[in-house]
Length: 318
Image (cartoon, rainbow, N blue to C red; front, side):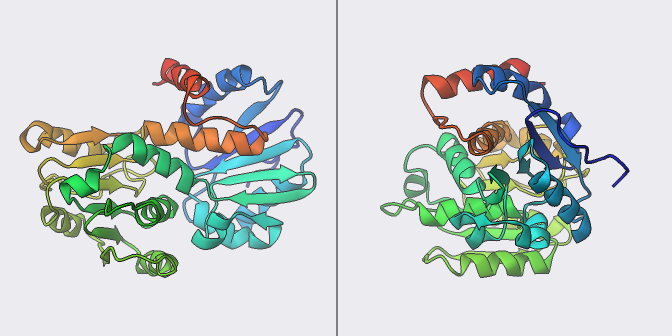
């Protein structure tokens, strides 16, 4: 890092550990939320780190937050697994989900103790509840294809497996990634969760392989781009030759960037009767979960208070 990259905070500070943090809507939204939540004179600051950065870089970042009195905590994206792996010894406590999944999306403090939380199981669950009609899987028999085997996919699979009720679960789940190591890691994590849902883990170093897998999905499937392609790196996990299954739901976890994956779905929306979502709802729930943890607040996930926060978010969306 450059000299003075980590400067002691002069007021309560929330950090955003990502890749292109200055482009995020949270930089304009946080002051409005802070005013509404009566957080006082506080700020947000981004730390941009390289994808899969060196362990020493993650350690420097976490040690700064831990030791700086006015640094209150952070939301972590893109680096959830790598950061925890590099900095495990810095944390005094990990929540149950962080221990199971080996990743964190939230850093908070209580006194001199540093806490790590995996909030994605909560925020992805809330987003899925918003995206999927009631008893969707039981009514349709659809499948899931999740492209990218990082922290978000770990959490989404956890929700799909753990929260199945009365047969309401996908008939099959396919996870793809360009890294065999990440596939082995997610496979090991989910082997600890009891399920009878067939789950396949596929190495896909070329987008044409993802195309072929998508072509074999049943109608009414859910296809998720959890790769970061289209936001932090250019491109899409599919080629333009991909054929989405009829009546399917297409979910791009990002809400900003070139988002070619969404363009590919939009091109087939009418012909294939697709329902298309970007990552805005996921973004809202993810940040609200972290702000509640860092500032020790009880923020509802529905009702008038949550709707007010959602309205403020809509007012600044780029």
